[in-house]
Length: 272
Ligand SMILES: Nc1ncnc2c1ncn2[C@@H]1O[C@H](COP(=O)(O)OP(=O)(O)OP(=O)(O)O)[C@@H](O)[C@H]1O
Ligand SMILES: [Mg+2]
Image (spheres, rainbow, N blue to C red):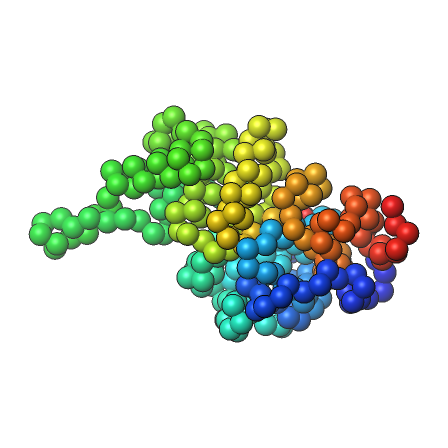
């Protein structure tokens, strides 16, 4: 079992980012029936940083993201974006605030093709009969979607009309990332973006994360692959048993320490 619930001690926490954080979470609690998935999480995310979010299965990583993006509104606690408290009670709210979330499997609707997935819920329309009717502008959607995915993400999709179910994991990921780029998201959240991808595709996703960071986009990446986290993250937040256990600057922590933290250990100065 875990340690008694020690809230993150000052010594375990990387210095808070200076200035108003992009995201400030305070006291987030989320219960699912008897299960307490989040036990009072406090976390600041600086604008433009890449935050790696790690923790064992069931630690609460996905729940934290879902609370932040309005999928599962919190039972307690507050969410601030750019210093203003927001009511994150629906995923549409997150989109309005420039937050795009990319899930490993749920990124696309399997039976829909590239343009339809790309513009899901935000279809482009064109007027018909002198403006009496609005119909979906399939041609423009296809052109924009294929161009963004090819030119900005760097992955060519052969047949834009093939259903997403026939795409590779990397292609699906590319479409979801392209959608976030097109929406000019300010905060991109990726829940295990490299899991189940080929080695080459994994590298591509890491490159995209670096490019988004260079453009000033704030990124939260959940991953069980510490090599990927260490490759791109500025700071690493470790969740354990529904708590934020520690936040460390990537340059100041070793893999061994992070593995220990994931298992619930406290940081010690002599940790290897
Ligand atoms: N919709 C839900 N209904 C009930 N319990 C849930 C729900 N979502 C998550 N939980 C529970 O909340 C806890 C945290 O789950 P969560 O999915 O956030 O973990 P995670 O850190 O993302 O794990 P993993 O690395 O396996 O994805 C778990 O005990 C899980 O069973
Ligand atoms: Mg998860």
